[in-house]
Amino acid sequence: MTVRLGLLGAGRIGKVHAGAIAANAGATLVAVADAFPEAAKALAAATGAEVREADAIMDAGDIDAVLITTPTDLHASMIEQAARAGKAIFCEKPVDLDVARVKECLAVVAAEKALLMVGFNRRFDPNFIEVRRQIDVGAIGKVEMVSITSRDPGPPPADYIRRSGGLFRDMTIHDFDMARFLLGEEPVSVFASASVLVDPEIGKLGDFDSASVVLTTKSGRIAQISNSRRASYGYDQRIEVHGSKGLVSADNLRATNVEIANRDGYRREPLLNFFMTPATPSGEDGWKALVLADAALQSVKEKRAIAVSI
Image 1 (cartoon, helix red, strand yellow):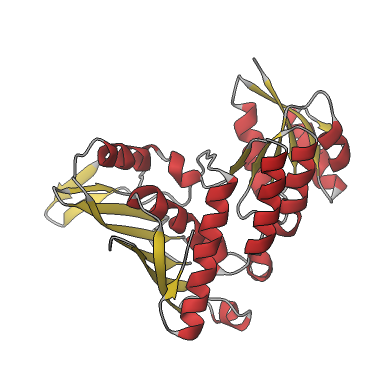
Image 2 (image 1 turned 90 degrees about the vertical axis):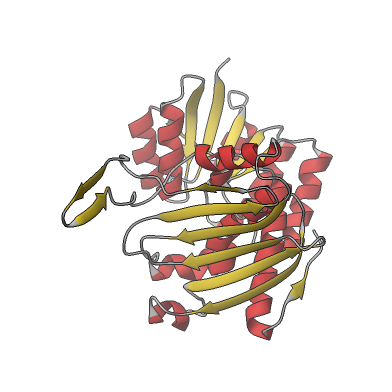
């Protein structure tokens, strides 16, 4: 069976998804829509898809599912429209920047019995999957502490920062989801500290570029997250889970694992510059990660731990 897809949004991430669809023999990109007609035309021409209006994609009988890669402020309404149209839905994170609006949207999805998946891609990183599997089979005993390092090669442009919702809702939100994925219990407390250490312009826009967050569960399990918008050495994504019987960790991906040793020391391949892996967590996971993001921002502002219930 071939899944017939409609793509809503032909920007950077939309192009990535279009490429993934083209590489999958079980999927075909039927149509593309974008607020900028030229962007839609260019992507459609590159993939063999048609250019259609967003409403036409939602109502089309020859489209089974939609991918929503538009600006964030359109996500919730498009999810609701697609759910009512009987489409399966993939949406880039976040569903919305407002927790209450996300809950409204999820209520519509539930009422329509629609399938919604949110773009937390790291759950589908093969290394992180293996870490979770080792936890599940009891290789490290009872989880006690999770450490997540997440640093991008460089900050995004100012225009992106303005509409991103801020560091916690845009970047750390992936790590909140990963912490929940590995802890095995929901966090009940969030404590965060954040600074502007990379780019003063980010601070002028009211955001942060560096942060540390501590999540605590009811039983006392701890997850600590380290974020930066800049890693001069490449895309830095590492996790470590400490348990009662041992430790499991996943290191960064490199082009190769070759290591050279000589009298000058040891040398390995540099880290990859960035990532792209497919992912499909639920809308509920998107909502819970946003709740944690909001709590982290509140923690920074009020300089105290924030109780959460998710």
